[in-house]
Image 1 (cartoon, rainbow, N blue to C red):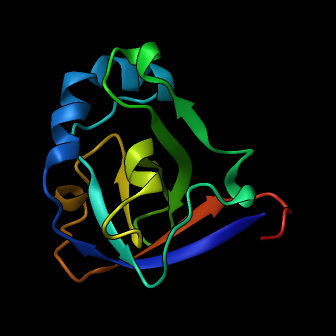
Image 2: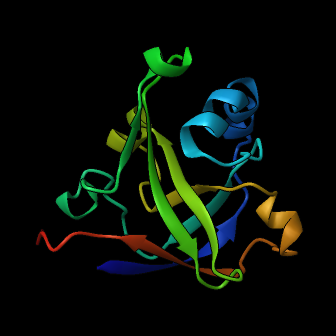
Image 3: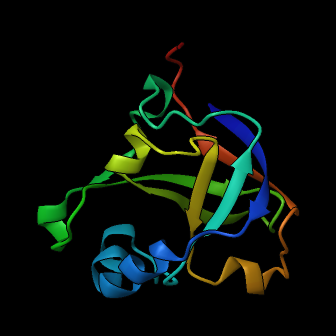
Length: 137
């Protein structure tokens, strides 16, 4: 089963790029792809709940002790439907997953700079398919 998320590209703070660059080798090894050191921020039309039981079977926990960072990280594989069905991952520190000032925003990491590769600009609509289990909310 899966869920289709739709949102608009928006400019981020650039904080993810710092961490994805610093720990790039560990992220690339964990995910099995070369990870571009930056994320694409997508503002959804609803709050995204990282801890929803529907995502649990697919959610990847990347503990700080595993990669040497300051925070535990959550990742969720996804398919960027509107971007040539490219495989990618939703990415967030657990602290942000629990208490983010804008919980409707998801960050996407991939093997390329998605904004540049697809010529994306703020406001462009992106469709993201995420895997789910049959668990109801």
